[in-house]
Image (tube, rainbow, N blue to C red; front, side, top):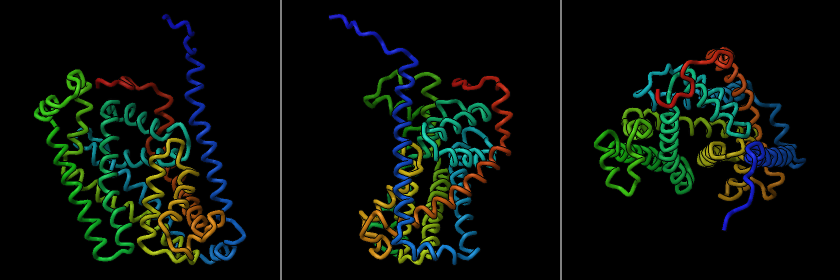
Length: 350
């Protein structure tokens, strides 16, 4: 029986695809509104008063840690691609600063801009960029998994926590890089050919660029530097929550701060609708789920003191990210990049 239905016009299809992230962003704004409402609940008036007593050193430390996170994530992207494409570290950090600020917005604008800059300006093929991002994502999971397990299991930052976290990250890094090396290069392609994978996926220039991800991940030195930077980044997130808790006089342990910082970071990365709102509401919910100190989390999620700490961290981070993005735009001359057509732009075969 022939299908007599008319195909959806292209413009209508585009609007339909745009509607979902737009609705998701509206939900994100609603979640942010709830988080702010919980933060500024009358029950948190005492904690709000403590904000006025924050010392300049505490505020500067929070801002410095937010800026450090931008730089560390730039280092992670730089070191993973450096073996294949020689891009200046300052350029990658500047690109990361712009993308980090745009991550607050929907439609994955941060990813689009990051891809556009590296393809148009740095001449990295699109397929290679995809493999690059996959490598960074794999390294992130390799690092966060042992830290999360150690924090949930030990419940405090002790010698055992450091042994499990750092030892786990080291072992996972070695294992992940070893597996990637096994499938890297021509010998690795032959091994992949013995797996139930369509042969057309393993031939041609496009396959070579895609399989470069194994070469990036299989570089022990790059993986070690990247995961060390990620570990420091997680500690920087935790540090921000510890300082915020100290300012607000909330009894949050170092392990709690690590869990909050890791959750805050991971939700922001995974959210398809922009990280604003979803990240804050998710972190507040996670605090209640895993049993962060009752005195800090409170019994009522609509007036949780943790909400005030999360919103405070977001406010400081947003201001820092805006400044860093401004420096990134100036450094990369993004205005010139947008005005001047680049030869071979978006060329996947370059």
